Image 1 (cartoon, helix red, strand yellow):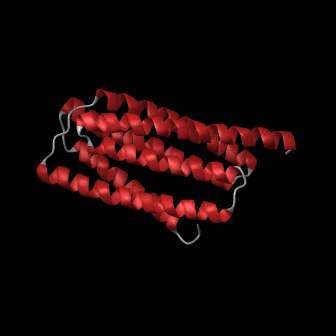
Image 2 (cartoon, one colour):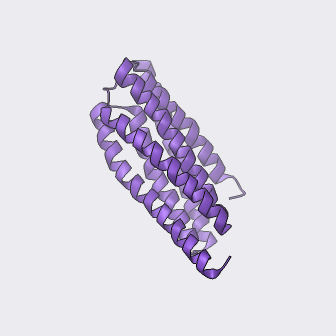
Image 3 (tube, helix red, strand yellow):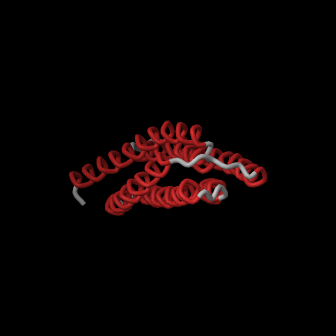
Length: 196
């Protein structure tokens, strides 16, 4: 690969990460509003997950800029710990919602946001994987997988919010919260393993 091609692919990687970062920054604000107005555990959890994904994108941007491995390792540990705290919080909220039969309001905005997010994340994931493979950059390829999983997570939240909004199945919302719990524990385990 020529230096020109390498530089072009590296710029593409940066652009994809900045788009992901910007989407998640907007997502934190949108989802906070939607979660508060609907009292949805799933939307609140997805918003907190977006906040953690901001940190993950920052780590990849550092790596692409050639920053030190020591700083990257510290940042990854922080992100892993944040995922664990999110899992504990959502587990408590979901159990409380089930035990009290908390009935969140429907959220058309939540349905629209999670549907659009799923499409965006799947598109970004494919582009990151392709760019990471062409660059020979395992970090960008891995981030592509994380972004793909984020798209799947958006689909799980979408289904939960849809079933609550249109069918009145209140339990679907905290159940979607538990899906986020499983995802965050998996992500934390992958980040905090000694290999990282």
